Length: 365
Image 1 (cartoon, rainbow, N blue to C red):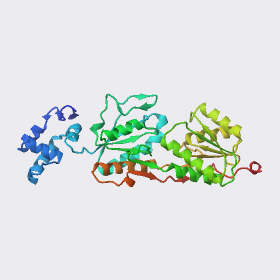
Image 2 (image 1 turned 90 degrees about the vertical axis):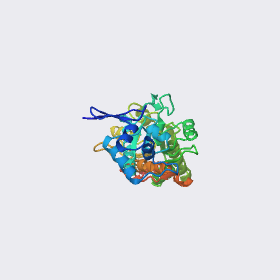
Image 3 (image 1 turned 180 degrees about the horizontal axis):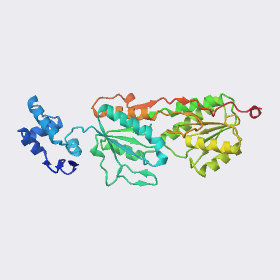
Image 4 (image 1 turned 30 degrees about the horizontal axis):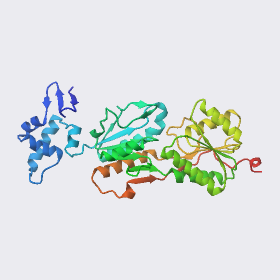
């Protein structure tokens, strides 16, 4: 077996045991050309006066293919050539069990998008996570190994986003961002949340409680805005409660708040919380949706077998990831992408589950 090693010091691939060290100089020797000619072919650049015959290019590329040479990514970036490497950075760790439902379809969409445009993905993981969040800039920063960067996370540091712009790191955020210079592809949570809540209120619910995170991420704020707009349009008062947890003992306090409010409709920002509240209702002998309706402003990627179908928003996360890759690819190509196309919001459909109905008659009297 030949082991291939890419070293960021000299960009060479060393094949063991029998190929020796493969360098640009060695490529030039095997192709019978100068090292400068090899460099021009690798970087797809000339100064306008040098013309390299196609036969020479083909001979160099054949040697490169046979020797499995791969240029150092950082060296190619300095030379102005793209490596077809897209970086992915997640502010929250992507692979703990509690994060899989959110990130799995998103990363699947990114992978599919990268495959379609012929790019590789580089997941940046060296940044230490502190209190569940990573810092984008730190002493081990290697962001420039990639041609451009895809940013994932519920909350992103606006200072770091502005620094990306100042440093010229071509970036697309996954999710709407308030920093004006950052391109993004997000989901229109304002319109979707308003539509779902208006649909629920139209059934006649008068006592409503909204349970949501206390965070300030744009997607969190957009959902709140959608709920507020629906309440204002209907003239209803909605009890607003920030919740600290989505599972375990935290939901007991949330369920107690639901019972004490007398609500016939629960709006839960997180689908996990909606499912937990449904389970509390079942244990307490409360019929859903006969006595209590529950809707969620999001969707779990992998609902459990036999789980109740919560009436909810269904964010198109795989589509979101693929669109983000497409936008970043356009930016990397040098295309003059219009401002209106650098900040996209995708529509979010509603899944008609089994947990929304009109309130019981006694509740409307």
